[in-house]
Image (cartoon, rainbow, N blue to C red):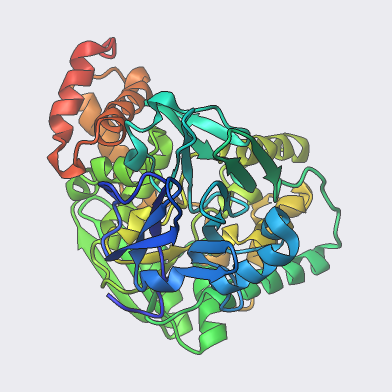
Length: 487
């Protein structure tokens, strides 16, 4: 698979142990590359992507592997130049959607970093023997961490002893000798700004336009629900490139075809409607858990419709979504006073790390590259720092975003109330009804979803089972029988 839409690398496993067996979920070209090597410290990388060789740059005693992308067509060479000048602090200047591994010399020192939001996750094992393994999927490192050291700037991965997840906006340098140091490259802004409303509206539009512009590649499809988040992205793509292709998914239970079609007609989009069954959406649960490596039931529920939709799109494509705007804009918390809304946004922004909602693994195993402009670093910075009174104003949620695109979208779209894709597709209500039909008490449905998600996680992430071999019905039956959920 070769496409300008897909970065040179979408997944990796770097090891001082040699190539060894690797089970990466990404399905694309795969190569094993020698990054460094002298005697014991041979460092090999299994790299998956559209052009794996193009993900590596070398100069002197440095080798850089870039998974994902950075703006201005920057590749690993750009990272290498910046790292040569600034060392680990180079990553505080890099925006984008990426993970990076820098190998020093023969591999006795490795520096790893992820973008501001950890959208391309990295997991690390550093043993007491000095071996270092880094991968974009935790499951690849299962069994390697029994002698793993604790590492600064990381958190333990549930169910995988010794495997550590690099925190969002962190750069970590690990030496085979045992010394390690972590640096923050970006932190969630704590301050708020009372910007003039008209200026805020203009700034939000401008920063989203910039984020979309650098991420547009062909072929590309924009996921469109007909809500303000996805519609604003589609309108921005249309303004930037002169055309836009959109897709909307519905099920036999519920759909958003009408509001999405309204936006598509307004933008002159080449629009596609995908119809499926809600049972097929729910059946994606083992794959979602395996690919995001997340056991959070709410995140899984949000991503189920996207995972099903991705199966309908051609490999080699870029998929752009409006996902994630609700977190910095407080869109999930309607009707709150400014002070309460501010606190809720702070809580949401302090708990996103590690949930892997934006992980490219969900699409890359199908040969897709997904991008989410609302979590571009500049967009996230601008949205987060705006005072709550600009996010909910005159009783309108996400007021600043709605005003920013009032002249680009139908009035019905601008004023349309929030409806998540998991709600619009009927996914949430269907899963709840399935559990109620199994005898789960109404007040225990969320607990049942949480337990099912964790049991699947234990099977496909910690246990190494293939998601296609997981029987969701059997897991559900076991959970209902084991837990006190029925009354």
